[in-house]
Length: 293
Image 1 (spheres, rainbow, N blue to C red):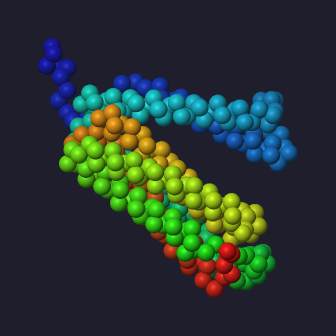
Image 2 (cartoon, helix red, strand yellow):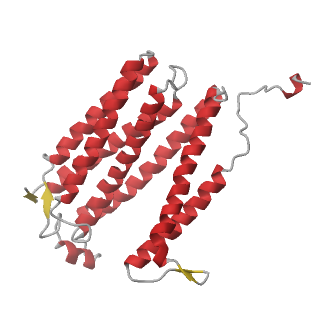
Image 3 (cartoon, rainbow, N blue to C red):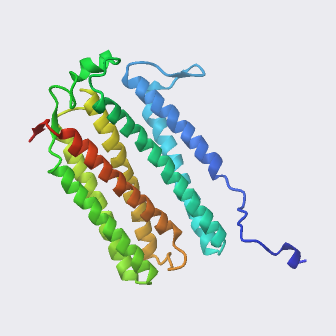
């Protein structure tokens, strides 16, 4: 009888889980709160089933975010538990990697949208078919009256920070493969510190930017592209910080460390996207423009 129920395949049939449903509920509540918040900031109401939610917009949004964050913690805790129980066979691990690759590909398409908007506006600022755009830009890029950031000041500093962080996370990965726990922890700690430093420098840059989001199409495309990347840096830093805590707890082994590997892939993706942002949005778009000091 025992042999009849023995697992004879490399796949993992997971136990019934409440987390997909709870995550969906949290996402719905968060979306309702965000919509109510935006409507309230515009001086409008947001009525659902006869109830105006605009007055409680922050609390609705906060409740939704708490549900999502708790679901993330609990769901990933279950995944870690499954890995420790030996359910992550070679086939399962391979499929986890496929999933991470597809996730990064989907994130890449987000950035394609921001780059598309930027290049469409910058390469054709005086397009006769876009009369309104020509009025906004003056037919040149950057638009008339816009002073741009010096690409070889804070942006270059942040580029060096991210490139250094790419080397430290690679050092941590090689240390893990060689079962060097001290090297793993040191490399991850340095990477997290560099990620935090990048975010502080970018925040300082935003506070002192000579243009605003709503001032022009230049400001809109600049802040959407670089801000979306900055959000990814924050997410990646948290991802690596969790890996640091797990590494200190002895979770990872040279043969089983997908959680760390996924974080490293994500961080390298963030690095590469920044190189494109720095090259085109900071350096190329500032050529011949007035530099703000």
